View 1 (spheres, helix red, strand yellow):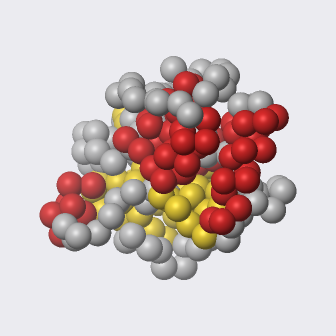
View 2 (cartoon, rainbow, N blue to C red):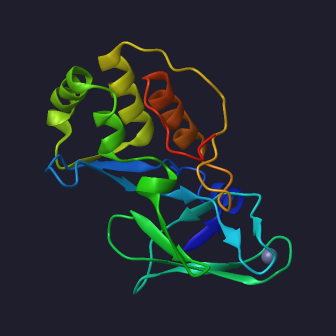
Length: 185
Ligand SMILES: [Zn+2]
C-alpha cells in the first residue's frame, strides 16, 4: 500500500515512518536500505511531489498508485523484494543505495581505521534491521563526531526532497569527511 505521509500519519498514528537499514555484513552487501518513506516524481508534468510517500507493503510487486498533486496524472509504484532497496516508478528504477547514499562504500571512504571501528561496532547487529537514525548514532559514537545540521540535501534532481533521517545520514557522511558523489548538494 502507498500513502501520502500526512494521510499515513493520521490513519496510523502509532506506526513508525522511519527508514531502516539491514546490517548484512557479507562482503558484497554490507548494509542495505529498507525504505519506508520516499519522494515521488511525476513524469507527466515533471515535478517532484510536495510530500513524502510511505511504503506500507506490496502485493505481487505493486506498492500502489497515487495522483500527481499538480496535474492529476497517475503515478504507479512497484518494488522488487522483501527488503525495499529500490522502487520502480515513472519508467525508472530508483535505487535507494544511490538516492539515499546508504551504501558501505561511503563508510569505506571514511578511512581504513574508521571503517574497521564501525564494522566492529556493527557486528552485534549482523542479520538485523536497525533504523537509519540508529545507524547514524552508532557511526557518530564510534567516530566521536557530532553531526547536527538541518541541511536538506539533494541527490537527484527529479527526487529533490529527502526524508529527514536521510538528510541526517548524508550530513553525517559529510561531517565524517566523505566526499559526496558528483551532483549532490
Ligand atoms: Zn504531474
